[in-house]
Image (cartoon, rainbow, N blue to C red):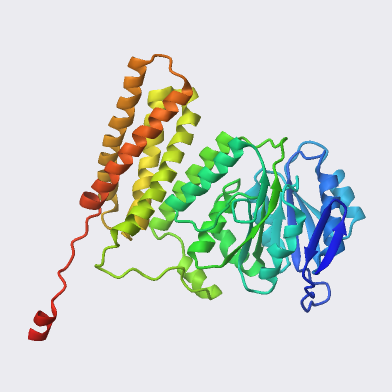
Length: 430
């Protein structure tokens, strides 16, 4: 093991020889999206370049993707100056904002073997760059992500961001059956051949871009490598958490609907890239065991409760507590029914999908009566109750409604007619 020291970072890496490279071939193109980051972009890019020059065994390029900045960041000022000074740095200017838009444009045009990106604040320790990229260079994996929620990760951030991050990933596990642990860490990489097949299917141009890309990759049977990272929160981050959360929930609904309707050619991508399906096909006519259903339903229920809470908090200041609760529950009910239909009870295809949603709304009405009634009683019993009390009542009522929902889903909406299995005597008589 050879210690490599570059400025503030020290990383111990295995002596991995560079792969055979054609002259002029770039192995890694790492994109740094920026929007009005004139105070950070120069120091961050220089720090990243010094690290890669000192210890990275592959050829690389750093691309500064300017997201329509209005300060001094756009070319030909800071970014262009860096590109002129450092051979491995280039700049791309976009006239529209959006991290996803920037990554799509740069990655689609890049000639590198591996495409990556990192946030301009370099919150992720750079020692994770080689572990992120190496499995893609070798062909072992198709995508790689840094995870702040995996075993071995070391993270420094506030309680609010920690809660939002974990809640969001619970929602993804419940609503979209995602298996990756951290969708929004700003530290990811993808093989270029995989990117060229997946990018045309990704619709989002903002923060949900990462999630959509990962969900599609996972559903196509691609291999996602996770790297535990050391990560320190940027206290000056300008990301609007509530607005981003609402936009992400809309993205979850859109992608879930597309997957349920079979609108995406994931089987073709799986065939092209040669990965096996992630799970065996279900056996027709054989219902899943209740323990499995309970586990899936519980995960989706937790995700729905968290999503309902986030939407309630987002809507409350505009609509008031009662209307905010109704709006949040309607959105979550549709997503919850679709997720349970597909992942808990194994119902695929469009047959009776509308009927199932209608029946799900009936169940939603019962849950709405519980939660709204609970809020109404709270208003009568304790006028002007603190927001924390309202939230506690909403959570408790949702838990009761969740139990009722499982019973009705299993015994009514998604009940399967089973065919009696013939005994050995009857089979022999035939």
